[in-house]
Length: 392
Image (tube, rainbow, N blue to C red):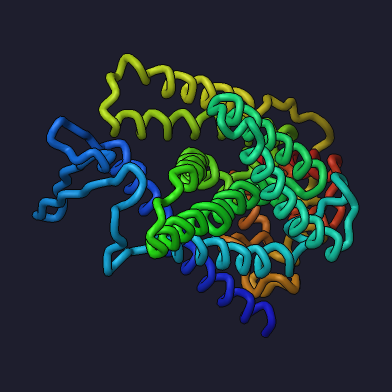
């Protein structure tokens, strides 16, 4: 019953997380595109940063942006914050339901680091918090005024965190935590910098003071960081479906390449929306393409010579009975599952032949299965399974 309730909580939380996440990302993309579309001419008032004309859904929109703020606070002011807050909160709940409650299966790999579930959960929460405070301190340092050096240091921070995660958690758990590490930074940017700075500017307006333009600059900086991190974090958060990413022996380098691909792609989109000449920004997709090629080469399946004695049907069924069907059965006995994941059942020879490509990807090409290697599936066991599959 507990597993059934956890499944529904997982489904509903994941659905909610996707909905509010789409809202947050959509708002972020829209405002970045809007911001780079503002233009100013000789007729524009001096207090305006620029004006933009938009058309959508059969209507025309005229939008002004102020250099800092209007002289008087308008009666109605729309704030954009709850999508970001709810994305983070639902993400934490989802992390708890999917990973913290099943830490032994999803986060711990004794071959990487033997941990107790409470230790894995404590490390998870602590490392995400440390990531934000480190990033925030870097942005508030003198580096915060130097765009390219700051970008390089933040890139190094994320890759360094990826290296640590892959040496603490299982492949699946580590890659998800890299995404959560970046997502935490993005959400905290909204909660700790962007909204508070905007609120201070509003308070200054209400008090009849001239709003501090530096507050706006800092909020804009964090907003730009968020939009550049969006494409990488989206792929990292769905990586648990792709063991070629999460269970690569050097998956932290794969994470670095995802940043190399996603960041420049987002830069190209932003600058194209700003109207930059293609000749000035084609370097960005070129770098992204190089990063993608490097990732494809790095994750390409290795050619393995399968040799050794023939494996009997009884022997392979004995292997699957010990290591697989606790989860992959019509009625799983594993406490974390009420039905076979992805509908993959492995209780018969026909099942093994039917799902052979998935078995090869999850248990032979990578060590993604069994989850957390709870059953102690050895390299020799994997070789035995590989020989049987190759013969069938």
